[in-house]
Image (cartoon, rainbow, N blue to C red; front, side, top):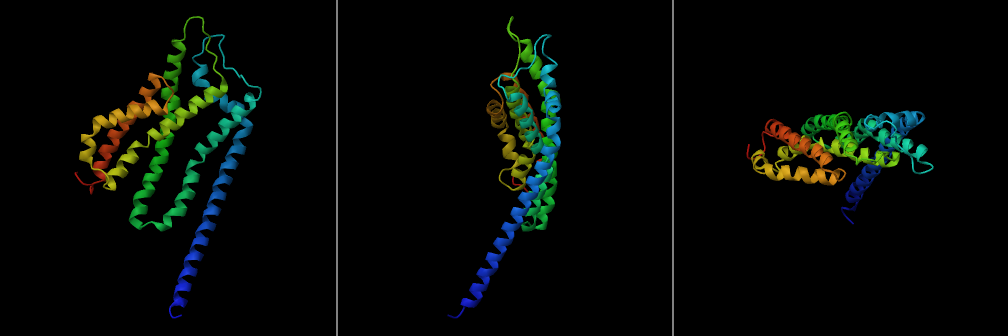
Length: 252
C-alpha cells in the first residue's frame, strides 16, 4: 500500500538505533565491570592490612587487653575481602560514573551538558568528602564515646564482621548526606522549588535531617546527631549556592 515504504524505513532506523544503544550500553557495562574487577584484584593481596587500617579508629580507643574478635571460622578471610570489594566500588566511582555520563551525554542539549558535568564532578568530590569526614572526624568521636560508656566489667571486643557492617553504613550515609547541596541546587535550578519556599520550610528540613539521621545511622543519639547536623549545614550551603546557580528559579 502507498506509504508503507517510508514507514518501514522509519521503523528500521528506530530499530537500528535501539540496537546501537544497547550495544553501547553493554560495552560501557563491560568496561565498568572490568575496571571494578582490576581494582578489586589489586587490593585483594592487601586485604588484611586494609582492614587493620580501617579498624584503627576503634582499635585506638580500646583499653589494654581488649581487642577485636572473629566469631565465625571464615570471617578472618571473608570480611577483609568483603571490605576490598566495597572499597573497589568507592575507588572506581569516578570511572563508573564516567561511563554512565558518556552513555547519556550525547542525548543532552549543550546547555544541559555544561550544567550537568560540573555538578557530576562536584557530587563525586562531595561523596568522597563525606566518607573522609566520617573516617577522620566522626569515627574517633563515636568510638571514644562508645568505649568510654561501657559498663564496669564489660570488655569491648567487637566482632570484625559487625564492625565492617557498622562503618559501611556510616560511610555511605555520610557520602550520600554530603550530596545535599547538589540536590538543593538541582531543585532550585529546575524550578521544582524556590529559594523562598526552602527558606520558609527550614524548620521542616531540619526535622527531616534528624529523621534521616535516625534511619541511616545505627540506633544511637551520637551518630544520629553527627549525621543530622552536617545535613542541615550542607542544606544551608546548597541554599546559598542555589541563589547563584538557580537565578532563574521562581521566588528568588
